[in-house]
Amino acid sequence: MNTAEAQSTSPADDEREAVRRIVAGDRCAFELLMRRHNRRLYRLARATLRNDAEAEDALQAAYLSAYRSIARFRGDATLLTWLSRLVLNECYGRLRREARRQNVIPMVDANAHVDIDAMIAQDSDSPDKALARAELRALLERKLDELPEVFRVVFVLRAVEEMSVEETAQCLDIPQATVRSRHFRAKSLLRESLAHEIDLAERDLFEFGGARCNRVVANVLQRVADEDDHSSGGH
Image (cartoon, rainbow, N blue to C red; front, side, top):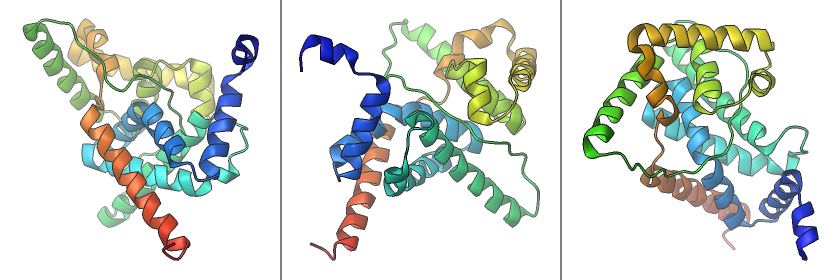
């Protein structure tokens, strides 16, 4: 491929090629897809479920669902939007099951989406500053967990993932005005506890380090291999 052809390749073309390879059984392509989206999809699951282990398990289940159904992906939405909807569907299903066990009605909303980012960030702060920021981040995560679902998910998409109002509205299937009001309310509630310090930590919420990323990918690939072996009769 010459330079002009390489530059003409669009993100949509790249997504279609990735899907084609995964449908053809290319597990390396599926692993790359997971590693590309792991961090932000985990953040969305963690914000919805408010539990690290549950979020990790829900993410793995969503990836398995994606692997099984990716042949039906038609590109009407981005691959990121499609994956995030699967993640939220899995999370909301878990919330509903838990609600039935507890005999209460959960506060859940529509659908959502996540974007891409690097999975491991390097922190050049001094040890003291790094520790202070880690403590602040933990506090912010706890305060965010206390927010109602409708505010919490919008906050994660807008402030943590830096999605636009329009993108957030499309992913959650709600009006843009609702996105703005929920984001404003979420930040107001958080600022009551954290004041101006919230801006220093919000982009580092729910860290998804290398060990967790590797664990999710390895677990999903093992289950994919088991399913493929079973469907082929062990051959």
